[in-house]
Length: 221
Image (tube, helix red, strand yellow):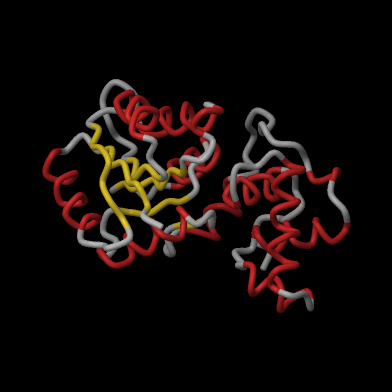
């Protein structure tokens, strides 16, 4: 399956460099380039992209706002957003996740890592830049904010709450299966059911729910 990628960055040279990189991968194609957040939202609709590589700092509408519009549009329910930025500050990571991004990387990521990130996010996994990941999420996702759009974990079974906790701690389906003594398929089913009950678009939103609800405490291992 070919991943249809939309590139959103206000710097032409950056977009062109990313385009060359993405087009070099046999399983990806660039279907559009946007210089502003609003262009990114429009092109996501017209080009039917599978994934948007989204810069944060853009004119007209920034990447956080564009991500929020994409995540709120039912017609774009299948579109994933991978936020890519020079600024790896705590606030940007948290804002990107709350807006509906499925991944976060800084621009000094190696080319091969960016391609792997696109594949990971397109496949429905959450991906966060290795450096700032766990510490920043644990520290900031429970700061005072409006209630999340998703449901809380009270609607989950005991097993689903266990799965949610492990997802929030960064485990993939295989690792969850090994931890709980399940088959990988059963673990995947539990993750999918948990997402459905919580109204989460992807695993990144499961992380948000787990921390904001207090199911996983800041600093928990």
